[in-house]
Length: 198
Image (cartoon, rainbow, N blue to C red; front, side, top):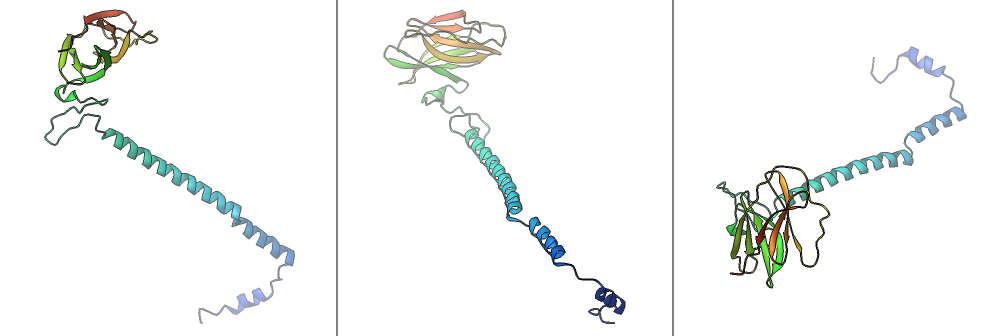
């Protein structure tokens, strides 16, 4: 028997089947067309487009985070494993302050001063010459999570910045005559005369 030939019993049964009416045939065609309608195709395409957009956003965000992590304004570890601090916030004076981070700047005697912090002390640097003008020891403080918020500064008192030592955040303020260190309750816990220009 040839595979292309049907069994004579099957052929006879097919001949006895009554053809479908035109309305039944049109119902079947309409149902099939509804399954592959443009609206359904658009819906699938929209879902795929949304999924692709999410993937692109995630990849882009990851790339941006990696670029930010390798910025020149951060610590760089050379191949020999030594840590070199690259100047931050536009400062050119950070090369000699490897274990320090910049707190901020203030103006005094017609020049800009930078204040840097380490775990032990603060260093004031002249921004133009990078000369170190003064070093002050951090005051003793107990660790707390208070932050000096809403402290009023005026034209004479300049907010230098905030920094943390041993779990305590301090606010550094430059007045016309001194640097004040304020704790989380905004109380002055230490003050030092502004260093003179060298």
